[in-house]
Image (cartoon, rainbow, N blue to C red; front, side, top):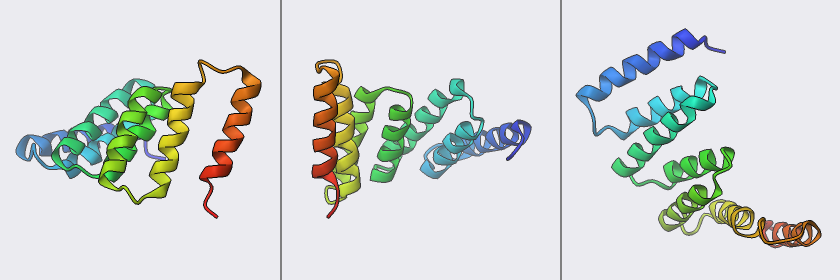
Length: 133
C-alpha cells in the first residue's frame, strides 16, 4: 500500500498537469483515483467531483458507472440512480448496468415504504428475475 505522502505527491503532480491540460478527462480520472486511494471519507466527494468533470468532458458509460457506484457506496441512492440511468443511455445493451440500476431503484424507492418481510420477498424476486440464465 502506498503511503499517504506518495499519494498526495501524485495528486499535486496531476493538478499541475491539469493546469496545462484542463480538458483532458483522463487526468481527472487519475486524480479521482488518487483521492480514493487516500481511503478517507472526506476525499470521496473530491473524487466524485473529478469523475463528474471527466464525464462532462468525455461522456462514457464506464465513468457514469464509476460515479454511480461511488454514490451507492456512500448511501446516496438518489444520485447513484441518476448516473446509472446515464450509463444505460450510453450502453443500453449492458445488462450489468441495467441490473445495478434496478437494485439501486429498489433500494432507493422501495425501502422506505415497505415492511421488512415484504421487502425481503420482493428483493428475492428481483434477484431471481435479474440473474443471467
